[in-house]
Length: 250
Image (cartoon, rainbow, N blue to C red):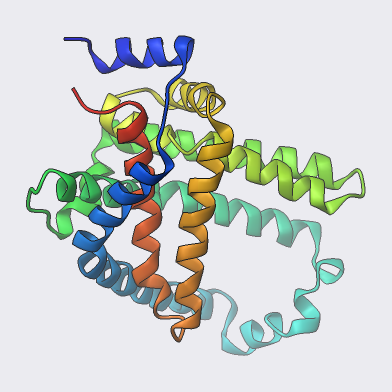
């Protein structure tokens, strides 16, 4: 029996076939099993983080200063200092790196749902173990820097749409990075390069699948916004379904 690494090496060389309908079915089947549990977990964690962020800002800047800062006219890009933008981008990137193991937990949750194994709240925090945390943190950091670098370089040409396309391309090419780390024990950089290689074999069908997932998630905005917390798990179920359909599990 071939190991995952041997199979992935062959896939990078020979390519693969993937069924749009089959991936959608896998994603929806698993989503139905995790939606309530994962949605509530998303909601509770977001509320707790929001409270923590508000208290931190209140203690750091003061309520009056914070109210002044968030006035629409003060949030226009031309009115923001370079120092503020650097702090903002750094904070957003750091936050994304820190929560990446938490989001990876929802992909693992989809795996448990697929094989009909029980999952718990602890599943969402399973990848905060040091081995996985450092790889997920580094992978998210590298992808974020690559994303911002390409987007900024293209924006500087005076065509904002190019920056958006560049950001979308990086996002698409890196969709297998997290599953490769948590399911195949790849290191961060190896997972990123392998994700790029595999995704480029079938970019159009994978783009269509991710587009469906994002559009489905956006429907949550039309359900008093709170619905977003219950549509987001579909995105991570889709990541799992794509990985399973391409690499599978031995």
